[in-house]
Length: 381
Ligand SMILES: [Zn+2]
Image (tube, rainbow, N blue to C red):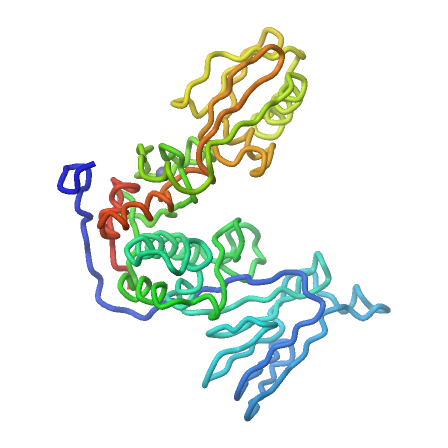
């Protein structure tokens, strides 16, 4: 690809008058029985008793989240409840060996009769820790900036949707896990992650209609990216599958997995039941010719043709078994061989591709416009 070629469209940039950096509530730990936080000049608010307390100097505060044995049902609320929040106006708050900016909030976790820990943190501070976890704090700044915009867009989308997205009683916007995106603590921050967040402050990606759409990313596409509908079924506007020749030499090597015919039959049956409200009516699987362009497998079980998404097979098999959705299946005697490339779901920004592009001198706007060719960059605050 030529650096001056027409593959890169310059991202349209629209600025909004500067407004405050939003704060995001991130679930950082689940099902804790005991929580000990520490900090200087801590402010403690016990919401359940409408009581506040200000400490001076260094203070260590312990919370016991295990319910009293004799009165579990009476003491443990059925819905998550904000019990306490702690902040330090002069510094950071420690939990275990991690340090956090912003506020730590204790929520009850009714299912596990324990506590969850949430960090209420300004978006930009959140991103300085996330970049070290989702990418690598030592990577080139332009790659980190592309990641910062993608991760900010994802978090901003969750923020806009509010906290009732998956269950009405959820008291946070997103969790620090592969379910959403992984963030860290102040200990993970590096000069590069700080610079990447600062130099893209407030910038997010918008779909062609001007709507904020979640900007997905993954470790390594293995040759081409995928659209959200090819992987999850839902349609997100603006996405295209793009070829990527930049991640091939780094990261996970191409992989191979062998499936017994019987095993594939059983997996196809499970995929049909779980995702298609259908089931198989036979035992012999015959695979129609597959190619890397196909995001679906076409196979006969008995005399019925079934079309199933490769990504659903991966969901069932697990990420260790099928590291990516970028694979091709062939029949060999009574077995099936899966040859794959890449690591991760394959949608949106390819991180190892971004790394390579940054090393070649491309800036973050060019990197983003390659993986999100129809999205526009916007300053949201
Ligand atoms: Zn790639």
